[in-house]
Amino acid sequence: MGDQPPEGYVEPISVWLVEFLDSRQPGGRFQAGAFTTEEEAQRLLDALEQAGGYEELCINVVPVHARLEDWDWDR
Image (tube, rainbow, N blue to C red):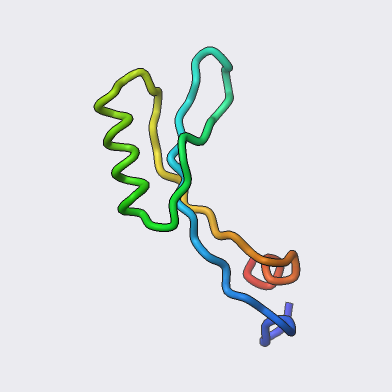
C-alpha cells in the first residue's frame, strides 16, 4: 500500500442494505432491499417494522468498489 491510489482508482459508492434475521434459517441474515441513500433504506426499515414479522431489522452500510485494487488500497 502506497501513498497514492492505484492508477485508475475510483472512489467506492455506498449502499445501504436493509437486513433481517429469519428464525427458520438459523444464522442466516437476509437483505430486504438495497438503496443508494440512507433515507430510502430507513423508509423501508420503518415500513417493515410496521408490517411486523421481521427479526432484528438493521441497516448495513456497504462500500462498493469497482476493482480489487481499489478495495485493497482503501483497506
